[in-house]
Image (tube, rainbow, N blue to C red):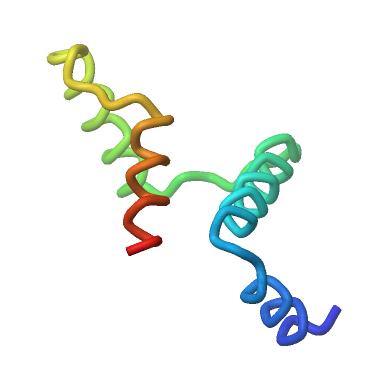
Length: 76
């Protein structure tokens, strides 16, 4: 695989297509066995975020809203 050619082809996609591609790539990684181990800093951050959520479960933003806002920002 020629990474430069692949990246050029990806850059030619629309933003929506690239977002869908990233999601598909992430989904394919998530189902693979032998996930990489978290670093100590990543584990602490996850624990911090979980504790914040447990303390204030009403302070969440649905993924669909976060995604829509991110896509909207890229279109500006």
